Image 1: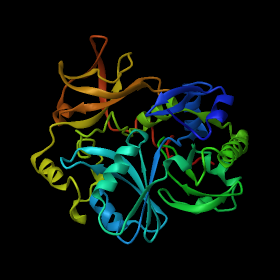
Image 2: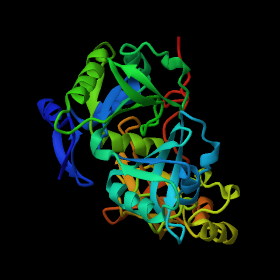
Image 3: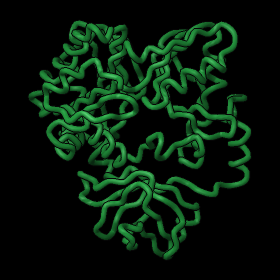
Image 4: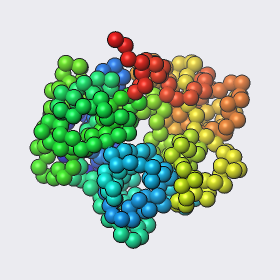
Length: 375
């Protein structure tokens, strides 16, 4: 099992360590609900170094990425990032990714931990011409301060004006005396940053440990908490973000997952384009839906989704929302579910009333990166 650079640090904080996607990861430190609410109300810090990073460089890098990803790489300026997908020949999703343009011919693709080796091998098999592809996952530390106070925390460690760094923008800046790549992005729905410390040998993780400790120290006055996978999952469900292996698989297309905004048909040919065009023209037989419980009960993966008393789909992710205090879920059902008189989720063999909700599940005026600032 792969070990994080900061594994000893997490154990020293009494983290509950669990296997995840081939890595030993912290599930929680002080408790999932408290960690979740720290992010929603102030700031939390995640170690997400299990995520995969693939460097793509060279004169043919742009053409290569245009062909193997669905978003339009040509629109990315240097120091910008965007969300995208990698498809198979049938239009199914091999992974959902973030792509950074670090230089004129220099890109970094961030992939899900479970898919890092798969996507790296896929990229190598599809490479043509002058393009260099390198898996830099094991030498990269990735930390994510997330929450409305994340900027205030990080600003204490850098002279760079973080107020000038817009959402999905990135840059190499000095933080706590180290040059790191910082992007304004995250997987919680809140404002926040993802920090990449590159070229960090696992045998000498001192810089990574220093960065983690400095971030926690800077966040003390704001009530920062180290956060694990449990809070990361509940936060992303509240935000309505997909998770590979749940809302996305090799059998599910971006159109069905309702992330069609990452598919740019007019950019030219890419792997999976024709099947997606056929699906778009013929109509979707299933779509991702959000559900909020109207009765007591916690929806879980695999539970049936009912429309007017008939099972029409299945839950892919569900949780008791720490913020809302009710069960929320995502799953797949026919588009016609939106015209159903009654919607329910089958919990322990009994239908429990629910309602369709377009995520995010929270009030975006009060929570999330677009919240209204008070004072």
